[in-house]
Length: 82
Image 1 (cartoon, rainbow, N blue to C red):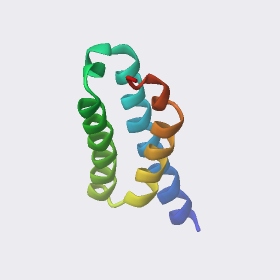
Image 2: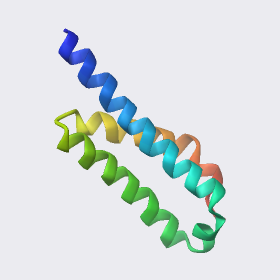
Image 3: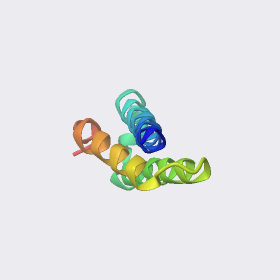
Image 4: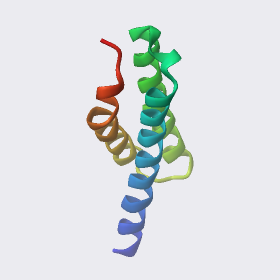
């Protein structure tokens, strides 16, 4: 049971880290907002980095991807260009 909780907690923390990092980048670096393609690529890149980092350290990649996606959909949505 302890291993399962550790796996979930570390995976969620990885997802939160990359989700918050991408959110801060879109908020403070407005030069990224010149193109919807750049913003979309940034979101996809951070989601994939979260997945790959979790996979590399043998944590749950799906859980970290889910956490990253939830942070991006909730917070970074408001920082997107029209």
